[in-house]
Image (cartoon, rainbow over all chains, first blue to last red; front, side):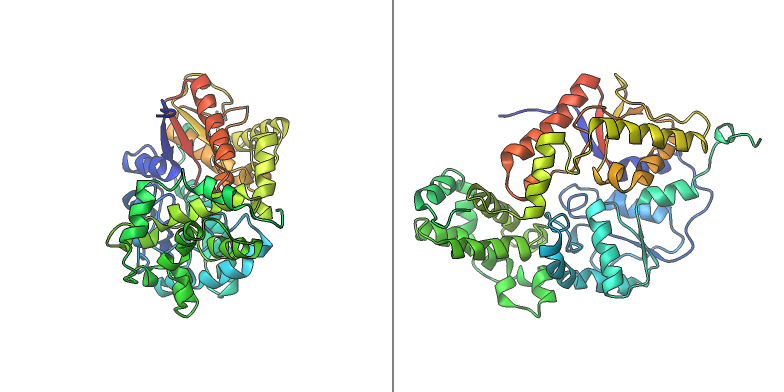
Length: 159
Length: 249
């Protein structure tokens, strides 16, 4: 039936999690402010990365606070299924249904929200403005590059 | 879309696609309402019964019962439900005692609408871009390569020896991005290059189309284009003989 791919498809969350777990990436420090993590539907519920997504957030945080419904049971941000790229026609609907996500985030008291999805991150940034959440939504990449140890041989010499 | 709706076309589209699985789901749904509280649209809209997931797919049964004899206005009602009231997040399925996949049925309805020329402008524009440029943002091959090279230059100033290998045959990982990255968020490409460099990863990005891992055609039921997009990625992976395809956050 159809085409059988010869290559395994993996997601960044899995890669980054494994790098830190296996010591290929070492962290200088962790984020001190309270954090939480969004579980993007296609990465977590459909992609099966609930545990690694949460553990990666925990690796990077001193004060990790899970949302009330987490992992596979988390809510959609309201931007999924093509809602974000649909643009103006969808805006009011997605901001309204995103109220659930906004409340979930507010309840945690987190200041930083890890969001491993382009779609979710745009929606959550909009929600932060709409519902005045006062949070910063970032990809894991941003946190990892800020917190990781750089091996001395990779540090450029000062002129 | 044309003003007249052709019933034969509607039934002709649905019949071969509503197999045993869909029929079973539609039959065994007992309208118990457990899915209601699982839906963010339902909760955020003051428990509006119209937002109950099992109710949203009523059109499938209805269209068959009506033998496809519906008008344009009817299809626009379907459009409003399947696009403005569902993200196809599959949370309802997780709570459903029967595991009924509502999102898959919404997806079928979106496909049906697409076959009738009814799809959101934003997604249709993206589809045109995929067909012409292989990515949703209409980034040309030249701009893509320029962006990658620029990211590499910037990052090489921060980390000694950093490279973003393009078309490296036999690399372990072929990395793919969201086309919004070269367009609006080159920072994302720089950051991942840094992480891969420090982790000592053996990676590459493809020069030709296949590097955009989004698939907006899938969301509006354009299965043909959706397949084309995925095929590009696997074609590149085979050419480059990589072991894994990694997708961005």
